[in-house]
Length: 336
Image 1 (tube, one colour):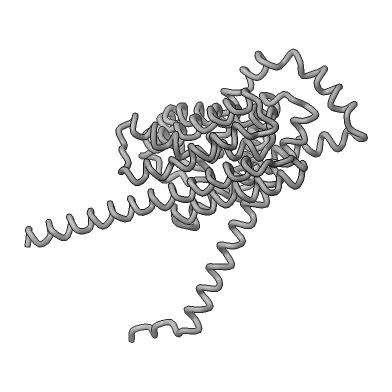
Image 2 (cartoon, rainbow, N blue to C red; image 1 turned 180 degrees about the horizontal axis):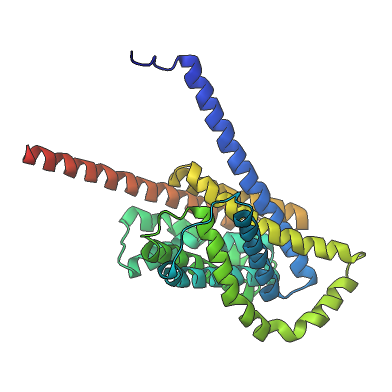
């Protein structure tokens, strides 16, 4: 006997459950991102050594994943030498993206870094074309508001610093190349889920980053630590900020991978755009950064351009999917 179709009430209940689950996923992701950005900036204001702080954040993520694997809360992935060789390029570009962002955070307001980082789609379109993947004209047009908005935000930014601007731009390059090389070199390791993949990227990235951090900043760390401790009423405050930056750096990345498993790429892209809005507003409120009207307009244009890009790329994917289905149907009809 065939099962009864779900009733209208059951359908509504399922829809409400999915909506509540989606709200929880985004709420947790946004909350963790805001906490990371605030305490990361607090720590950098006292201890302006982004190479060490970035290394510590990767260390926390590595230890977190090791604990999950050891306790069997997260299944340990089946990996081999070929996997680690394929991971070398994505992990290297992850390091570039992470340390460049930390340098930017140490030089300029959090809100400005995130406005510039919203230009990541521009780099994605350009570098994808250089790697043989070409987007249609409407996708290229969708990034123009991002370029215009970031340019306006840059020339009107009160906390402007060249190193902060270049750091955010290089961070975009690093993360775009990480995504491109992840798709190319890790294609055959689809049995490794997003959380485990990010865990191994964190571990390999730490191995890349820490020796370089010692060479670049190591001689300043002891004096920087003493200055930081002298700048707070209680050393526990500084320790807490550093620890929170490390924990929530890993947690928000973990939540983003879990969110991508739960939702469509389009919903994720829109959610990521709104995440930047939430982080920008929260950081402006937390640090009381002055914002000029033209600066706010430029930021809004850049964020809106990111939204247009997500819509344009989603439309392109849908069109490609329809074309593939149509082509398949034609082949079936021809064969029949």
